[in-house]
Amino acid sequence: MASLIGSYSLNLGFCISFLIIFYSVKNFRNSNIFDNKIALLTFLQFFFVIISFLGLILSFVNSDFSNETVFNHSHTTKPLFYKISGTWGNHEGSLLLWLLVLTLFIAIFLLSSKKQTKKYRILTLMFQQIIIIGFFIFIIKTSNPFNYIFPIPNQGLGLNPILQDPALAIHPPILYLGYVGSSIIFSSTLAATTLNDISIDWAKHIKQWVLISWIFLTLGILLGSIWAYYELGWGGFWFWDPVENVSLMPWLALTTLLHCILVLEKKLVLTSWVIVLSISTFTLSMCGTFLVRSGILNSVHTFANDPERGLYILIFLFCLIFLSFFIFFYFHKIENKSINNFFWLSKETSILINNWFMMYFLTVVLIGTIYPIFLEVISSEKISVGPPFYHKLIVPFLIPFLLAMAIGPKLRWIKSNLQNKLYLILYLIISFLLSALIIKSLGISFLLNTVLVSSAFYLFLITIRDFFTKKFKNLSQNIAHFGFSLLILSILFNNFLSTEIITNLKIGETYESEKFKISFENIDKKNEKNFQALIGKFNIENKNGDNESLQPELRIYNQPNIVTSEADIKTNLFTDKFMTMNLVQNQDYFNIRYQIKPLMIWIWFSVLLISFGGLLSFIRKYEK
Image (cartoon, rainbow, N blue to C red; front, side, top):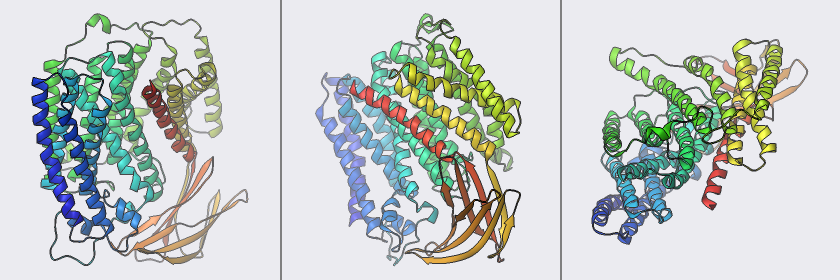
């Protein structure tokens, strides 16, 4: 019954889209007052999509295996929490969640934009409905979450065990709020461009949507990184996996857009940048959806392996891009060149430099992600682009980028000077001396690492100074920039100081190195509702005499019948001690991986600080 109600609600929501467009066109042409019927239909559409989504949740909770999606991704022994999260832990359900957020955001937009002009609100609604209709068709025709199975199976196939995790249960909804938030930015930018209304007032209005999308996308990436760290056993925060890159690309574009909006709030410049970046952010979000769901990417994150679905998203994406380019080139009036000439030493110039750096980083990530795909299509040759590619191309340019981040906020709008800026040179000298001392004591490659750490310390020290000298002025910006400097420093020292030992051990054996002695003491067994756990007990003794007990697990799930490795991680303020074990096929040995990962908790904390800076800016903007 829940599936039936969900299916009918989905189709009713689809039909309402055409009524919304009909009344929107009529209202746009014939009246100066916004027709309340349009708002009522928008909220009704949102209501039907909610009912549809709740219908799918109830189908999962009740283990209704007459529903094909439930059969493919659930099981009666699965805990209730994972039955609910399993609703969006699959291709069909995740798309329904996309649709839910799309309709939610346009409803919120209509409520929050009452002070805006009628034509702008209607055009934004119409562009958003084009996206919504595209997703309705995609779901109903290729990815229907309410397909019926007969005869009804007694059991389902179960959810992939690596997805049965609390962090991953909340990761997709948070990430989608970021992805789908960019759709409102896209729609409103096209509307404002069509009306030739890219203005300072519009920038102040749209900034809140940019901030919302940016905050949720940042938090979503953080949750995904934490999940991959402890669930996949990679033992790191980022591995340049293609699907990791897919979420990073719109974040880079969105961060650049946020800085452009800051300029546009002050002065009517960079309007072309704002339009292009608004289009690019949503396009990259859609591109990520295509790459993840087409099956052309090889990653543990991919949702589906169906070229037909990928082809639909690709065609839909090209239609949106074509529409965007047509509106940009036909309606956008290029700014007067005289007002685009910045003084070389000004905050506008620093933000423009920031834009070029961010676009370079975005281009590197984009090429590294899609180049293997094109190479395989052209030559049938498979290659993988790993961390060395990104490190060699990004790290050298990260140095001037960090210096620009430190100096830029100290400049004034329109025109600045070098008076009272000698402290910037003093802090640079202190940063270099401090970095040289640390790098030399660590005994690693000196020149590049010293300059890189110096630039990170420079931003770190300058932002700390701002907390004391500026007090609460630009507090949100200071917090975000301080968080970023802390992130870079934590990543650098994490790379410099990490230690890894990989060995094969039997129960009762000991591995000894110059620094550690690892003793494999025994294995315990534990039965849970839907899996059996083999818990290894290891004692790690450091050369200084400290002992640590770690207990990684192997989990054997009953449905589907999969073995997963669960890391045991001991965390404190300075370091993580990380251990996984895996079976060595057809042998009595276990493959043991023990890592010491310094400052991991500061990597997570720094991203939270960055997000908090955005949240504080949003709250202050909203209060105004």
